[in-house]
Image (cartoon, rainbow over all chains, first blue to last red; front, side, top):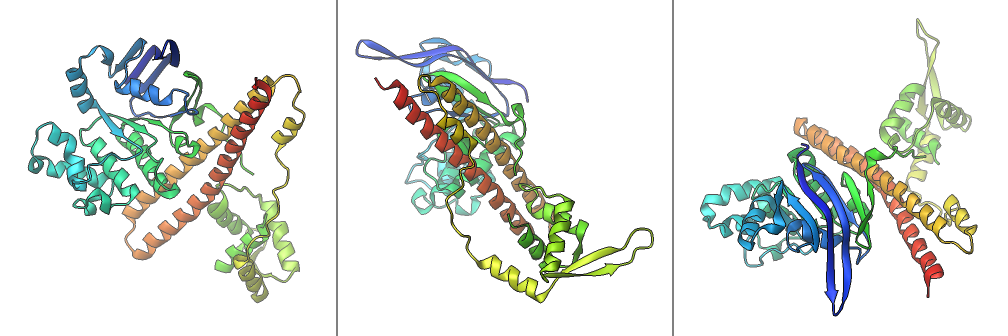
Length: 238
Length: 197
């Protein structure tokens, strides 16, 4: 429960634009433990997406150290990193990113098919993932035959199939209406609380962020606040 | 707030004495609205005076007699009419103390008010987390209850109770969201005012 899943030590990231350097992250130090659901908030340009990309190993920090599950990911070569991500990290995007010509089941199985397994060998595994997101009855439908909320649930099932202990989500409810978004967030919260998955979600929506155990707010590339309901008194309502 | 109609609605389901009424009230609305027994009894007296409820006195051997209240036909009419009437829409009263603080914001220094806005934002955000946490637990409890329930009636009752509780938390969350959006807008306006070059 208390294993360190993500550790960032003095992480900074600077982008070069012509001759001027633009700081995107400055001096971020952060530890996220197993089973925690963390929301990262901040205005556009605050560095929240850069932070998620650094955690995912999609962007290298300019200075500082990033480790996932105790492994320093920014000193791995591309192959090592790809393999590491495939085993440890699932991604959930705002735009679902499903392959339009494949069925829900095939989309869910995709990470295993890329790992050169045959569909018939992984079918039951993919079905089990669709069961978790309550979509088993739609397994033969293609993305365009599914609603937005259903497509996002397929994407979550796909993120789960590697048994990845870490899920990274970028505005997962950004394209969904309020009630459908709630279903997705309740599901994510359940994955963290009941299955001990660690989730890091970037969002600008306070209602979505409120599902997390902790909200980290960024401004100008720095953490300006870490908020959890346990650290504050329970509000009284009249 | 309409304590009167809430009590009429509960008595419309079945007659109850004062303490049972409080329990039923807490069960339906207690998540967001706390009411003491005193308020229940004063409201019952008023309802009785208006002829909307009446009571039977039940003798108890070891305790004082208790009054079991039931709704009258007039009470039923009043409740039914109220239940389907839309609310009068009036501008929200200027209750927000923060706005008054804003009125007295200093003319030279933006920092104190910006600090205040950030602190207030955190308070609303933490409140939203507590309310959302409550939603998650209601959802989980309903799931467990549904797997244990055997009849269609039971399942329907569990779903219905969940929907009502969720709707109540939704309105509190949406209000907190409105406050948060207002604070963010204030912040931008104040920054524009003070930091425009």
